[in-house]
Amino acid sequence: MNRIRRFAPLILLACIIALIFGMGWNRYLSLDTLRDHGQALRDFTADHWILSLLALMAVFTIATASVVPGVFFVTITAGYLFGPWIGGVATSIAATLGALIVYGVARSALGKSIGARASGDAGMMQRVCMAIDKDTFWYVLASRLAVVVPFHMINLAAGVMGVRLLPYTIATVIGLLPAHIIYCWIGARLNALLANDPNPDIQLLFGQFWAPMAGVFVLAVVLPFALKAVQAAIERHGRGQAA
Image 1: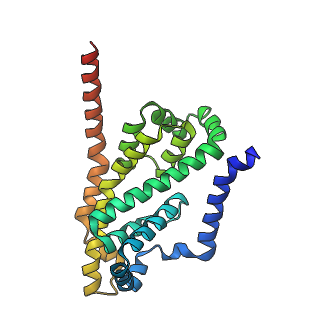
Image 2 (image 1 turned 180 degrees about the vertical axis):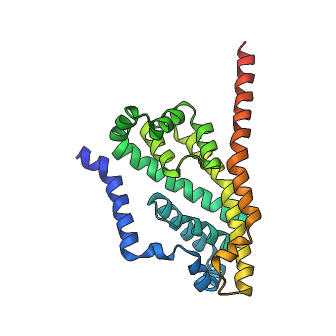
Image 3 (image 1 turned 90 degrees about the horizontal axis):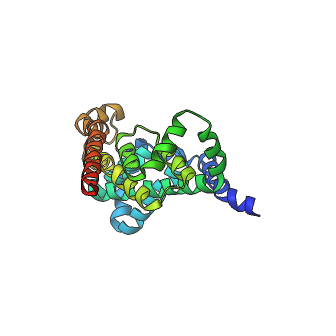
């Protein structure tokens, strides 16, 4: 019975993934959906704003937890329907909920096996586990901002090491927020662009957004170094007070 309870979250997640791909729902996670059904989605959102926001967050949470390709396009859709600020905050929270689901699955079903493998392996998983266990908040925050470590590897490592949920959750939300706001700003701009050209070339369309995409690059490169400097300053201040 304990074994069944331990693997129940993993089995449930696997069933959700199989259902998504079996029903072909993953095909709707693309900009073609906005191009073909964007106005209908906006009309529905205008009539059922709260329901639409909760539904989008639920889709984002499930897509994140099930590792379904196309989550980026859900972020764009959030900006298209709700604007950069509400869309960015909502998708950051939803992505964090998805990350917590993977955390829970890793801790319940995979913790012992992956933990033993990570401790005997000198690869990236071992380094991530050691780093996230040593300094959860700063490591998760820097990794979410810089995308230096795959999103779900951090979630798995956090579950394996059983890190404290509060710093892990706060760091995930804050770390995801800047990039999500930028992506949602792109989605908000798509509304006007698709109104002028309902059948655009998607690649050419995204070529117009080099400036916000450069902003994401700056977040990924500059902010982690700034965070390291802040962390070092805090540690020096703490040592100074202790002395």
